[in-house]
Image 1 (tube, rainbow, N blue to C red):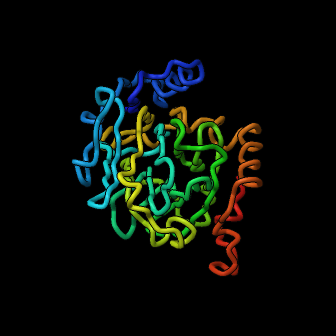
Image 2 (image 1 turned 90 degrees about the vertical axis):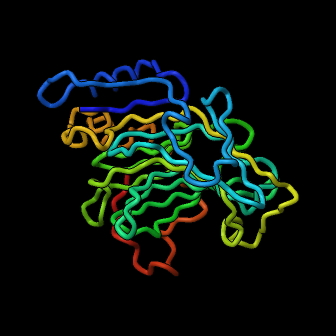
Amino acid sequence: MMIATLGFSHWKTTARKARNEIKGLLDENGVWCEVFGRPATFVQDFRVTWSETHIRPIEGGRAIQLVLDQNSGCGFASKRQYLFGRVSMKIKLVPGDSAGTVTAFYMNSDTDTVRDELDFEFLGNRTGQPYTVQTNIFAHGKGDREQRVNLWFDPAADFHTYSIFWNHHHIVFYVDDMPIRVYKNSGRVPYPTSQPMGVYSTLWEADDWATRGGLEKIDWSKAPFYAYYKDFDIEGCTVPGPANCATNPSNWWETTNYQALSAVEARKYRWVRLNHMIYDYCTDKSRYPVAPPECMAGI
């Protein structure tokens, strides 16, 4: 079994993660498995997918700057694909008047009409207004599952950690340690279980919809716009790789403690939903007179 553990910063050594990594070292037969972990750099672990001149490695390749101007946005992707696990990135978003810009961080199977995709999209704002994060989930080609949350801090003032956790039981989106969205494998609708996904990010103009439904347009006099990324970290099964990795119940992310939110996480989740959620497709009667079945699955 190969479990990839990468990070722009040094391999984390907290007690919890140390325990988790040990869980992932043995397969279901008790066989010691190969694990690698090292600081990642942009050149080693990512490739530019769009406008190389607008992506600038900084801090010796441990971080990158994305640039959006009137000529182009930009994007990058991981060189590997992964099946289950946890992926995270520290991001500092576009500051000031960022209306009409979208900074995206997501996973995608790159399989056209049957694609699986897990999205963070950060929607720019007018100065002084809250930043909105939109999440969306595609499973076997079916998407249109948007939820929006106003962030309770200024995400352009400093780096914050955004994570996607994915196992056979649920998908959880985290902002720092706050779960903001849960999508359960309820058996009622498709769930991504078989297609590996790469990690992608883009910075681009979307002023036809991003800010107040397109009412707020991008102010090019404020360009160029910058977003910053660092400390990419993933623990998961690389594909191609040993076929039994993704189905191994001994992987730490598949163990009992990670099959549902903890009591503390559930309280945090409810706080976010009560105080900061501004849109949920599950309750949009104009789109769905009857709530989609996955909306009944709870957390």
